[in-house]
Amino acid sequence: MKPYTYLLINFLTVFICFIYSFDHRIQFNRHFPAFLKGSLLVAIPFIAWDIWFTSMGVWWFNTDYTTGIALAGLPLEEWLFFICIPFSCVFTYFCLDKFFDFHWTNAFNNMIVFVSVVVCLVLALVHQDKIYTFITFLSTAGVLIYLHFIARIAWIGQASFVYTLLMAGFFPVNGVLTGTGLESPIVNYNPENFMNVRMLTIPVEDAVYGYTQFLLNIYFFKLFQKKQLPENSAESDLTAQTDI
Image (cartoon, rainbow, N blue to C red; front, side, top):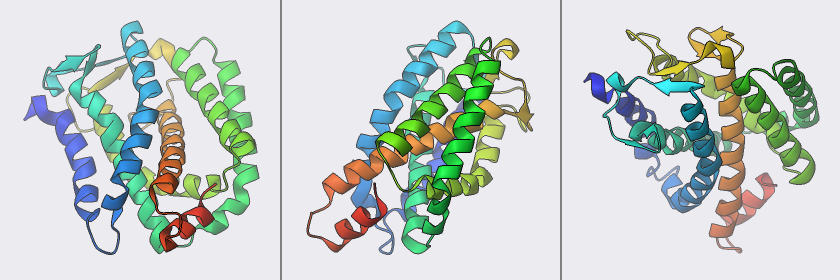
């Protein structure tokens, strides 16, 4: 079982969400094409980032917990991570948006963006010598600036609230990956390259990294979803109201 640990984490993360995607009340399966296009587009820079950092020794993977299949220095499981995790996150956002009204959180868009950008830029500048911290916080600030001021999306507050709820899943998944409950971590970090501030076993940078990835996945999912749906359908109208 040990060599399949990381693979099992990916499977368990996505399995329940995938099954419920076909529920007649949810019908997320209708949006698989939009999700795949969006997630693959987002995965490109994040995988490049992953390959770069792995080659530099910023982080590395314990092959005791992987199948041994690797591409470009990354385990197969790490490649799957960029599909499985976004799938469960986008599915959760889709369901919460469908069955609950969290649009009131968008009233805090300006405050969330202002505080987040300022904090991220300050931390990036203070920790310029720590590449994981620097790149992560700088990227997050850049993405928030683009989404809020250029793309002018209206749902940053809602997405941020949902991401906070997703912490209930983030902690067990990333906790195991970073060593919680295992003899040694699956993902190891060079202490010289990040702040060494951890939430249990999880570097703070991981949560910020995940937030950036989540925002981009939602953004591109909505773009492709809008193009996919018939222009005259009721669902298309609903999507347009909750989109950009």
